[in-house]
Amino acid sequence: MTRTRAGLLDGAARAFAEQGLRRSTMQSIASAAGVAKGTLYNYFRTKDDVARALFSAEIVRLTDVAADLPPDQALVALADELATHPVLRRLAASEPEELAGLVVLRPERWTELTGWLAGLLGVDDDAAELAGRWLLGVVLQPGPTTGRRRQAAALAAVLRPPH
Image (cartoon, rainbow, N blue to C red; front, side):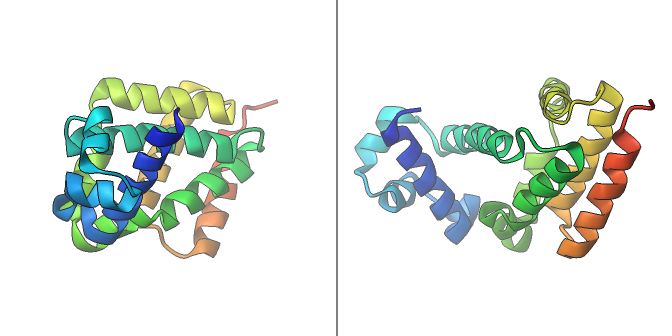
């Protein structure tokens, strides 16, 4: 990813966290990124394109956060990131219907997400489904940190393949 594109997505994350998805505009995203609106349009045609690109970039970032961790620690890291993500928390507080729209995935997108989780956690498809459903629950209702961490440990124990 180019530095400019990364800067635009950082600006989008700031704008979405401050104003929400609905109230953010291409101008507010450009301003948050410190660029002219024309520069933003050189990379993205619409605000929806920006949001999709930010979602994809966040998947890459989350992969980096959880890579090489054992499943229990990876689940904790992912849950903590999702529970404290400024854009997700803003949407939960002020635009819950937008958040719901983000977590209702088309079947092919869900398959892609659970495939990513299976590879990241080193588990089979069924275990990845279970982990994905739990993580979506964390997005919607993060709960206290101690509870998430206990749940992640319990889930990791369930996900472990039998010896």
